[in-house]
Image 1: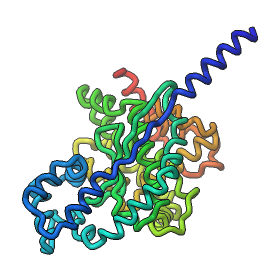
Image 2: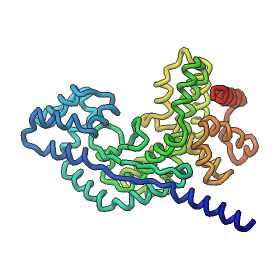
Image 3: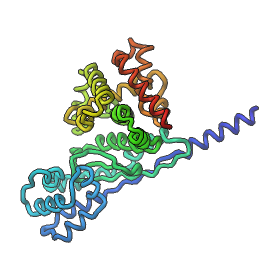
Image 4: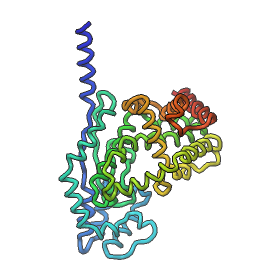
Length: 358
């Protein structure tokens, strides 16, 4: 009996130990862009070379631009001509004005590389047993996003020029964006949406789309919890001010989520999915969906322990919402923000529909 227990523990420890993150930092886009704007006379060949680089291709994709607009923007900014319209999305005029500051920030980030890596590597506990994930952090200058992922679960991007030389902000965003990579590697939610689309289950599809984002953004906000960070630094102070708006209107946020998600389910033929998404997850609306999802994650962790988040990573996101509703039914005093009975029935219906397509 003792021997069997020892073997089990050895196997369990082995599984846990081989789950790891292998992280690299890539500054090539920052260095290439700074070098480009330092040239007194950039040529068309210089512009073409920069446009062809992976970093700028990622920026173009993120801001939904194209090579032609990028080329005109680079030509104008390198020649000191004011940009207009969609050209401003690249933010190259600002970047050119702050080249030395950005150069210094790169050196500071490199000098504190281990701080960033340690903060990221701590998230390896959320990987599936035996999983080794290779992750590249690509630092960019260009575009309007402070941090984002695209289709590759092994890469995420940091818009370095957005941070006001704030290393704490870089650490916080790295945690948030890396957790998105872990989410993508643990459960294929895109495949679930594809099955719903093929089956023409549009009520469940649209509701799933909103619910999915509540889960992925909410749990990423919980993991990269700004309430545990130094909020006196320039970037983090702005983040805290932005998030705190939602603390004063959390009841309204829950009401808003219920109405949007129910509308997505009932009136799926009429809604604008992009507008619904923007209201809940856009910076200009103070990201209420992020904060609702974070509150739900905190409540579930308080009830069931920190590793409940790992359980949800390998299950359907609608189960995360369903379990929160159940928690509010059993402990209403401890969880005052909840949803209606109709909302609960709708979530149960979506969960059942997804299960039926497995």
